[in-house]
Image 1 (cartoon, helix red, strand yellow):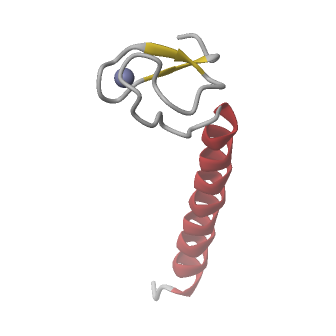
Image 2 (image 1 turned 30 degrees about the horizontal axis):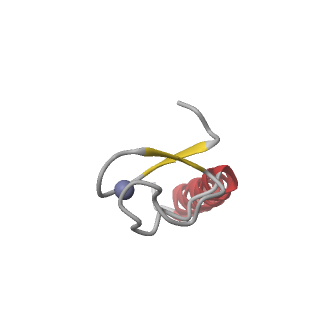
Length: 64
Ligand SMILES: [Zn+2]
């Protein structure tokens, strides 16, 4: 998929990523940028390691 284009949610026409509105129907395009995905992944990694750390601590404290 071309990262420099955004697909209109309403008419599914590919638009230039610089466009704020669809060139076909004029509706506002999704404001997602490629960087947003990276931010989501790094947040997911932080949450994942938080859960792993929690599990390790719980295993250490669990009665055997
Ligand atoms: Zn459109």
